[in-house]
Amino acid sequence: IDRRMLEMLPGNREDGLFDRYVAVVETDTPIMFEHRYAHDGIDSWLRIQAVPNGDGFVVTFSDISDAKMRELMLRESEAHLQAIVNTIGVGVIVVDEAGHIVVANPVAATLLGWPGDEMIGMNVRRFLSGAGAGEDKPLATYLPAGDGVSTSTIRAVRRDGADFPAELTIGEFNVRHGRMFVVALADLTERDQALTDLRYVNEQLGTQAEDLVRLAEELEVAKTAAEGANRAKSDFLAN
Image (cartoon, one colour):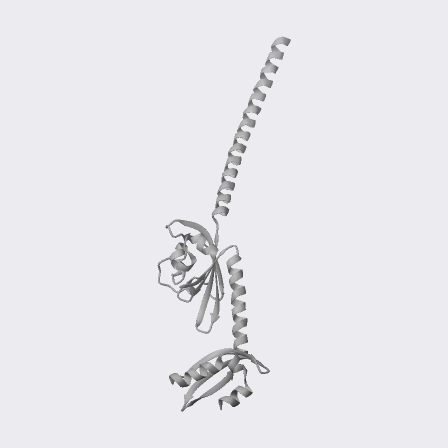
């Protein structure tokens, strides 16, 4: 039987598959594995199962090429998404329905002062003081009814306990085992500082404007007084 098999499918020996079948007989232990078979006019991903059968073995082959192609496409999509998430200019955190972090991009890790791998498994609410930190609530609580996206301004909390103003955007998407959420976090410190500086400048301009008005009024009074004095002097000299 083994000779006929190798005559029909010699690639089994070239890939070392036949040796694995022999080991099944020698150890009396069945095996199942996946293998890309590219011989004998075949180029397919196969799920191969070999079981001992007396002094020989029985091998079954299942073509799983379509499933492997879908798996490859999924991995490529995940890699593409990961590349986007890692290079986007805001903090991005993906969490499950309970709020546990499953993905955190480098910007989020930097903003919050945690190594990205240590954030995995943490509850995102510990970082969101303005969104109910420490409260045992589903993240969906913070989504507006009838809308899958919510944006708000909060105080985000860093690892050292310091907080900073941040814009929080939460969106949801469905997966087979439930809902997931994408949390985007943008640091508003510079914006808030710019607003503070602008308010200060406006206040200073307002103060200066008041001073200018007051000075103009004083100058007008002085001018009126001077004109009156000049008239009085003229009248005196005329008399």
